[in-house]
Image (cartoon, rainbow, N blue to C red; front, side):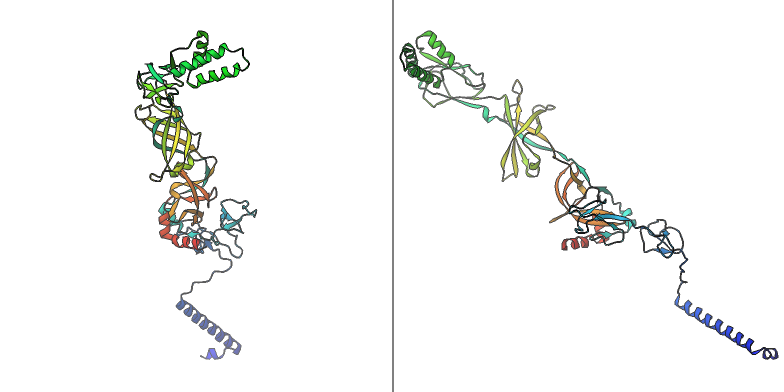
Length: 448
């Protein structure tokens, strides 16, 4: 005690000051421990973050506990700046127009980049770990020339342009039938029947008399009129020449066939009296036939006149024939909702393709130009709108309303809404919907 009192006054002040500082520091430490506050990082400490999850920070290197990616130094005082990832490019004047690569918009403006973490419009963010676990697959939209095979049933029909009716043009009596049964094949110039007609006998005599009076001034015109009268009654040039050579009228005249074909109907009998205008034969040329098919309305835009088609008949398995589209009906059948299409088909030498046969046709249709397409399974039909899900990268997905065209070969034509190169989600659309509230994003898009 004595030694303490002997300490100089200045030394006592120094000791008491030190004790007071220790007491204050210990009190502050006890107070901070009660509040459970971690030591603050200085400006020289390195802070690490996940590239996929920028909100996760750590004061030591390692891997992200969420996605497993390696942590990188975060932006800070004296730290290198972490470059942001470009998700896509868009038109500053028209944000609805986007592109996966830089360039110019249709309005001439330069496309500006949209970085990860910025406002992505209607895009929604999903945990990358959830995306990986759900097996989301994507495929870029690409330019393709779509082709499609239209296959439908058909029926063989006779060519209406090759159906001929043979009428009587003069009154008379059938003396002899040369073509006397249905189904008989005839050729042009072949005798059909022999006819006795008083009118024909009189016309022959008039013609011969005009020839004898050829010296008169007006005989030329009369001769021409008499000759034309015989021609109008189906008297051939050869028969007129024989009449001139013979110099006497013939009692019976042989009427010949004016066409090639098969007798489909015979309405004349030997010894029958015929009158002008009476139908005697129906002859059909089967060397070319028609094939009439019914095309469903969704396939109508793909059928054009001049297209080639493969025709298969049930009666000749393993054989196929080539036809050409020559007619497309102007109106749709109201009951079946189909459109009639006609093909022209050359028959075989033995006429094996017969009207009434059932056939199956295949029309290979090729679209005129390349167009942006996406896989068919990527298209979501939601009633009034058609959507696809565009993968923006970095876990961002955007529902996009699109206008679609034809579907062929597993791909759907995109007329409007998607640009070439954009990544389109193929599967797990409904899983995305349940995990990220895609419906809300669609509602926001619809509201806009």
